[in-house]
Image (tube, rainbow, N blue to C red; front, side, top):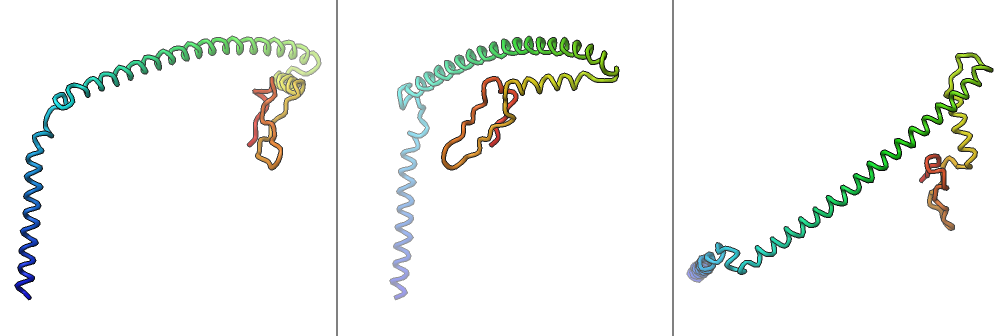
Length: 161
């Protein structure tokens, strides 16, 4: 019985060692193909593929930079026009506050400030436009609510979620 066990162990060791030797031999024979240059294997196809990928990438980057230049030019134009609008608004406010203070000083003491008059003018324009303070856009069951800010109320009305 012990002899059979010893024979089985020796047979198993011999089988494992021979399998390892066989794998090692195939690995050594295959290693020469691993270190060959890619240009020999695919006859230069990979280099042309990399070249075409690089050209596509360069073309995409050029298009993106052209689009970015257009956006920057538009932003500069918008900033110039918004500064013009801001200047016009400030000029009209200063003109109206000058008129308001001149009428206010004639009827009120000189310590009165012009800021309440400007706030009164701003609130009267809100009331004239009939703009709500907020629009309720909470989800409901049934009919959906319109969640659009009325025209002319963009800077006044807020959307509540």
